[in-house]
Every structure is written in C-alpha cells, then in structure tokens.
Image 1 (cartoon, rainbow, N blue to C red):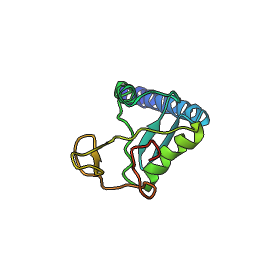
Image 2 (cartoon, rainbow, N blue to C red):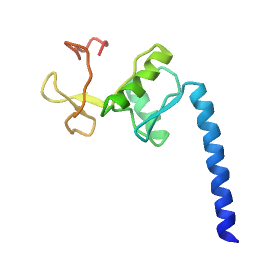
Image 3 (cartoon, rainbow, N blue to C red):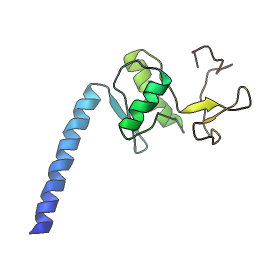
Length: 121
C-alpha cells in the first residue's frame, strides 16, 4: 500500500511540475537544452547580483558549452531584447577567457574581433 501511495504522490508532483514548466515556457522565462534548464526572471541586474540570484535559485550563471546551450541563452536575449551575462571571466592573460572556476573554455561563439570589452560580445 505504501508503494502505491508514493507512486501517486510522485505522479501528482510530476504533473504539477509539468504544469509549472508549461506556464514558464509561455512566459518565456524557462527553456532547456541537453537536459539543462535555463531560466531568467527577466529583470536587469549587474553581474554580481545575477550570480547571487542564480545561486539563491540553486543554479549558476549560464555558461554555454555547446551550440544548443548557446541557443538557449540567445533565446532570452532575443525574447527580452537585452544582453545576458555568461559564467566566464578574462584570465590573467589579456584577451583569453576561462570559466569562473578557472578552467579553460572549450566552446565559444563570439563575433569577429570579440570580446572587445565594449559590451557587444
């Protein structure tokens, strides 16, 4: 009997999550790529405030590691007609970038002559 009750609770939770995801998709505040969830609250903030909000939500600032993840981030840029911060930083070597944890980037998709530090990357 306990197994059936647990299964019912799991089904109910899955249904509620599915409905919530549907609403978030309609509001253009959530998308996914490769099993990762990308989300936004649609508000403008500085880099440090963005990192803090991501951490509070149990996630991290978006870091595209392939074209699909880049497209997921671009979805928000286009939907909200704004920029997006990425989880990367300039390394000690000028014009070389790395992930926030210091590891080397394995994927980039910048425009020619970018990043230039002029906010158009």
